[in-house]
Length: 366
Ligand code: F0G
Image 1 (cartoon, rainbow, N blue to C red):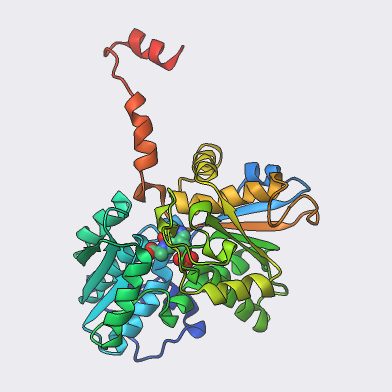
Image 2: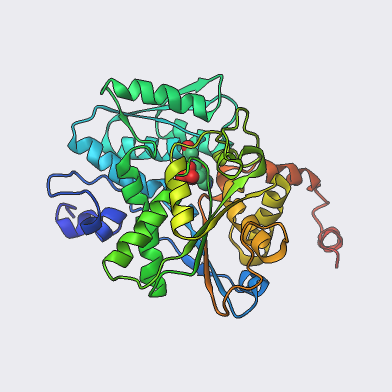
């Protein structure tokens, strides 16, 4: 069968679904891998932690084509780059942007160049960049250094920058807010998410506002962002020279969309807060074991943050007195398999036993 008719070409993807809200025209060649339409999972055990009849949902962005939310923005950024006649894409990355850029560039048939902090990228993400055929340059520096270099190289118009400083990326990413409203019937009361370079919180806020302006929703959520304590420039209100955290995806000391994130938090009457590496790892494990959702450490920052809002006197935003039956959405941004190092440590406990039913019964503890 010939796959040439438009119905057969692409039945899914954020441009297909939300094109009227995106900077797309009939002359934009659509580069899509079927991203978006990710599950908004109702989580009974998280809801119980919040109490007061609240409902907690996890927006699982880890099930996008390359395993992170970046694909939503990348389909738009790469489609637009092709419309402009680009020959190559370039990005700095803590891992996920590079995986996504490399995949969409491969799909479009153009070169992707990714600049990464050497030795600081989670295994699964680096594997992806190699698999999709990116030109990879590792630098002796951090993400902020990589982005500075990319900005300079992008100035020459040789490359299209596909970091979230590219407005087409933000446009694509705002579709996650649309999807949440479309499923819930209105915006939630609270939206929690991890913050690194601060593009995603900017995009969600733009999406919620746009949908409200179009009368697709009646309210706006309070946006609550979480940074890792060792790399929390927005929380501390100063650049962090040597950002450190187990959540390598958000190891960023000078976020590009700092101002926009501040505006989203202020306008939505939300908050910015910090969570420790220990809290992040505990939340990662809790979510996998209690709700069946395995996410990378940076994503678990949103869940650690949720627990902090529920339980801690020190939380920047307390859920102690939130209205009954509030709806809370936590975005988990990337799949757990991308960054398995913390879990593989535990696999050392696995010792083989003899291949008999009795030995296996004993090992199970029966
Ligand atoms: N979660 C994950 C899994 C990420 O990869 C990132 C950012 C964030 C959260 C934070 O999102 O930057 O929009 O505030 N990763 C970028 C990258 C920086 O290069 O992959 P943000």
